[in-house]
Image 1 (spheres, helix red, strand yellow):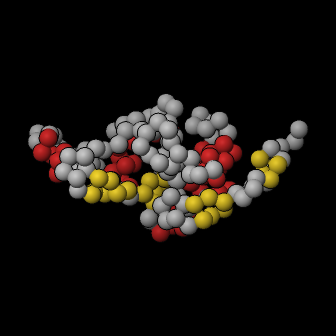
Image 2 (cartoon, protein in one colour):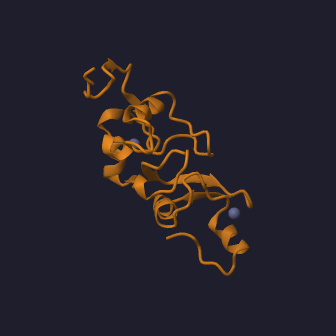
Image 3 (spheres, protein in one colour):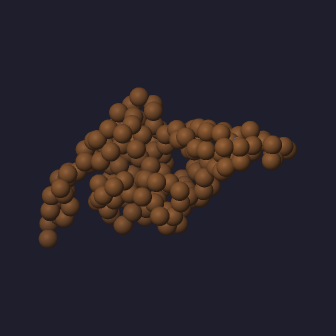
Length: 159
Ligand SMILES: [Zn+2]
Ligand SMILES: [Zn+2]
């Protein structure tokens, strides 16, 4: 059977919407035209098929069951252009059965020690997963101040 490679099609059957919500800005966009979701970036081994990630995003954001990440991390073209998000290199990341990062954007997290809100910065994320090779499902538990209190001899793990 000849496969229809037109955007918005899955095995020749048109998908209902081809729309998804960018996790970085919250805008609805056409999935098949987004750079961070282009076929060359998300093809196996990360996902069984290119279409599978688009479908996962269409069906409610692609919740990752293996970590506290609530969605597949990608970003729309507008967020990449404006610098709100940066492209990830999924091939430099360490993974087993968790979703890779396709883009990074600042994320607000709550410190489990002091309760303060802090930013897990997009460049810090790239450093964690692509330079330090932390598993993609690993996440910081505490803010920088608490980390340094606990590990006074260690330099911060930020870039
Ligand atoms: Zn966006
Ligand atoms: Zn803290």
